[in-house]
Image 1 (spheres, helix red, strand yellow):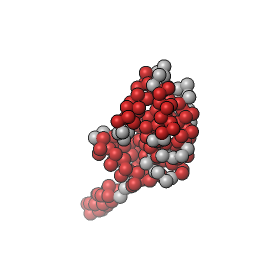
Image 2: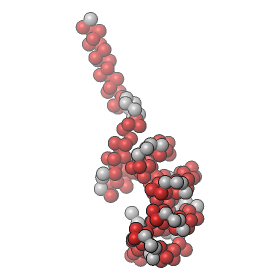
Image 3: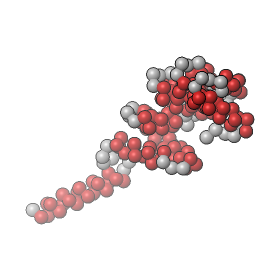
Image 4: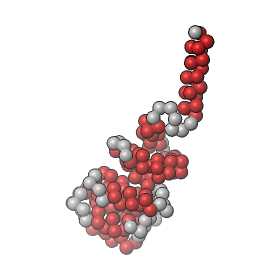
Length: 187
């Protein structure tokens, strides 16, 4: 009986070692993703960009889409940012457009910025549309996206946004104008 008990303990130990060594094994992999996202978001700005890039390289579109399915706003923000890094991926562009035009203004904010960073040709029309939105968070995101996108024909729209009724929109427009004036890359 002792030998069987020892064998079971040994077998359980082996399974836990294998589960820890193999990504996605052991406890539900989806449980670990929020911890991974939180860890990445709590790093410094330079390290964060590297960590996000590494996440995108390792997980690709399937891993990013898994995060979009969660109820966590932090995971969605992170995932939308990641979609902006998938430069040549049309499905990522389509997802960003869907979220930018969707019902949730916070998702829209992050999606339009990522769309601008992605440099997708479709970004220009989405930015122009969101600048006309009644929702200030969408207008704010559009101002940020202009700086990311880099299309000089959109720059005059920042002047009007700098006179917006909402202080967050004005601030985003002024910050983007200042960044463009100084020739800095928007992080």
